Image 1 (cartoon, rainbow, N blue to C red):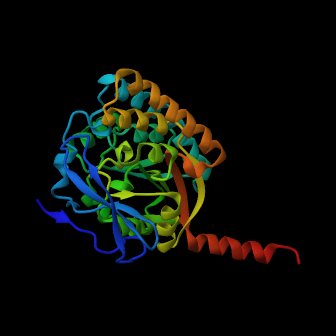
Image 2 (cartoon, rainbow, N blue to C red):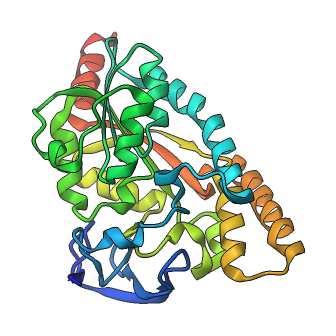
Image 3 (cartoon, one colour):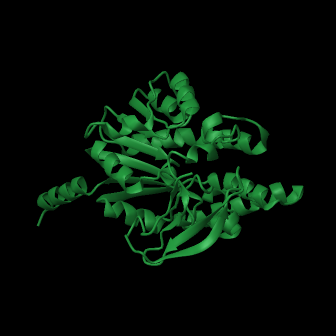
Length: 316
């Protein structure tokens, strides 16, 4: 198996990397991978992880919900309930911040196509990218669209879309900086890039520590906080214009984390809802403590041009 070892920080380039803990793949293999922090910028990441051509087996399970649509068990049923609730919010968020119509949207890592379907119903021009073959087939059937694999993404032409979305996807992608550069290239100057990411500085992450299910090692390679997301996007000349917390994620992630903890039946369901409720309340006062956060970003160039135009039209 081909292993990728990170020797310099993908965000700031520093070589001062420290192992923070040994992360366990609680979902499938029980293998252990080091989780490291950059001493310079604080970016956290999984190290010594399987390469793109080898990591597929860590997803190969009927219980991997975003690829299988399984309703088996309470946790999966809650996932579907939360996803249905969030679909309306995601569509509304895109509509509120997208450039003027027509909206041309690319959803990267579209899974089984639920967001694609919802976006298409708005009358938007929609495309999807999905690596997993079975999920890609499901997305094609659900949305009625031709969903392409990741190779098609790298061949896309400049300024093809005015909205690019990645719903809990960027943390999976080995080519982190190259992917952001390509996304920036295919986005129009006035377009938006929407990222939904787990927050390793959230209340539930602090509570469960290395058992926090959103580490999802080794499928999640990069473990973001609001600060490191901003540093990464700034590096690529992207500016965050909006942050939106995902309030329901804390409950789902806490349920999974408690399962990994091996708690008794009472704690298995009671404590996660307590942790989720506390996390939800704390994020009301400090959104940067939310379990997951949606970031909406734009290119710096358009923001600078808008700022210059505003300065010219302001009365002296």
